[in-house]
Every structure is written in C-alpha cells, then in structure tokens.
Amino acid sequence: MDIYRSRLPSSRPPWSTTAQLRTAIEVLNKLGERLNIHAEHSAMQLSESPLGALYAGRIEVGAIEQTTRIESVATQLKNWRDELLEQRRQCVSHHV
Image (cartoon, rainbow, N blue to C red; front, side, top):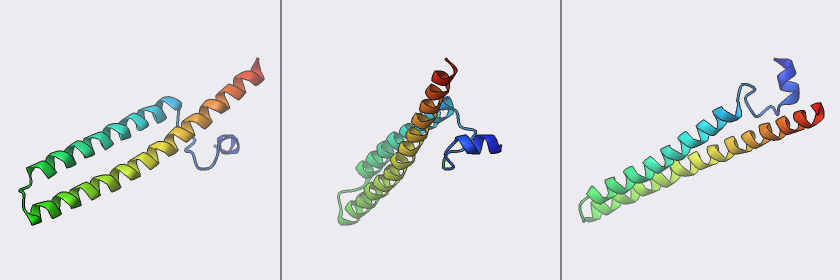
C-alpha cells in the first residue's frame, strides 16, 4: 500500500482505474441530466399561481445546486483520470 501512496497523489484513491473513473464520470453526467429533466417536469406540473411559481423556483434552485456539485465532482474525477493516464504514459516511456 505504501508503494502506491508514494507514486499517487494523496487526493486520489489508489484503487481507481481509468475505466472506473470514466464510468463514474458518465454516471454523474447522467444523474445531472436526470435531475434537470425531473426539475423541468416537476415545475411544468405546478399550477400557475404565486405558490406554484415559488415551488417551481425552489425546484430549479435545488436542481442547479445539485448539478453544480455533481459537475464539481465529475471535474475532479476527470482530473484524477488525466493524472493516472499521464502516469501510465510516463511509465511506458521509461520502460521503452
């Protein structure tokens, strides 16, 4: 385990593979899409009243906050994946 920690940045889990990171990124992107679609459908179903507009606004704000967090995590995963790919390239170039 210490061997992995010395070669990998401490912020990235040592067990991550590029395929796992790519899958996690895809899942997060799909989740963000579904949250937006759900928020749109929920807002459309609300009545045209001040209370309905208030609820629609809250739904929209909640969706924006959630998708912003999701995008932040997806960006970090992309960075980790890129770091891992770069480390692999360097290992291959050292072995060649």
